[in-house]
Image (cartoon, rainbow, N blue to C red):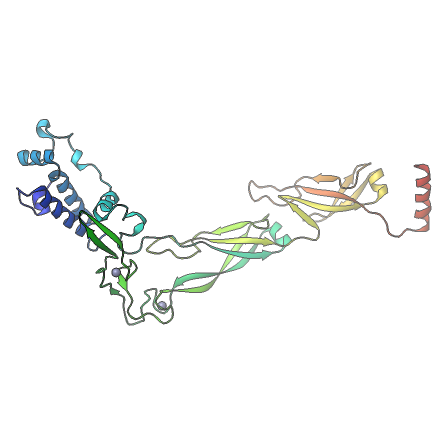
Length: 348
Ligand SMILES: [Zn+2]
Ligand SMILES: [Zn+2]
């Protein structure tokens, strides 16, 4: 290690106060988050202060020219080089909690872009079969005029004169310094003197983008599809948000959806329900023949396995549930009427 006195720029007989003062000044200047900061230098300063701020270690260094524990004096070997938490130190320097929430950092903290949500309307049949649809979304992008700087073309943002580009201002209160985002540049460190006319200095504008989105077979009303990274751009180098596309599925005049099952009404006559019959039932893949057992009651559900909607998860399909509906004729032929009258007599 280099000479800690040289690192802090203090004399060999410097007082604890002088050492602390020199350390605070240098640490602040070289902090990786400060303008012109240098992490290697910062660590070196921290290491030097670690030695000189501890009377035991300082004595050991003065005696041996190192703190490597030669002779066993002082703490365990190497303890002085243990990892330290940059944010803890920073918080201590600039006032407790200042580093939290990004207030004490230079420039804006990386912030993930917002998620966007949009709806797409599809037919019942398309939802069952799966379909590719164009989805439009209003997405924030860098302003096309200024390229995102917010400054009128031909001009450039200037370094903030209040915080000198650091993005923070701090007031000293004895041992502690309170820091807050610079009110003038709102923590950016730079300011726009001549705002771009297109975006009024925000550097951003909204544009309509169209994406081709694949709605999976079996999508339900309300199914959300995530388009990763198609949301709002992040700030300060943060990642882009996502775009969620919500499928709005039209209802069907034929089918009722119950999860992955489809319910379809099947009208049957009294005679077919009572005697049993083969009836034709609609399915998404075309009509099939279904056996109605003798004595079936109205409302009974007859299950046709694997003829429902495709499952979004796990593959396969739900079932088709044929719901028997008693079909009572509004008009009858003379013969039908006579036979029914006969039936009524015998079944009393
Ligand atoms: Zn602009
Ligand atoms: Zn400023």
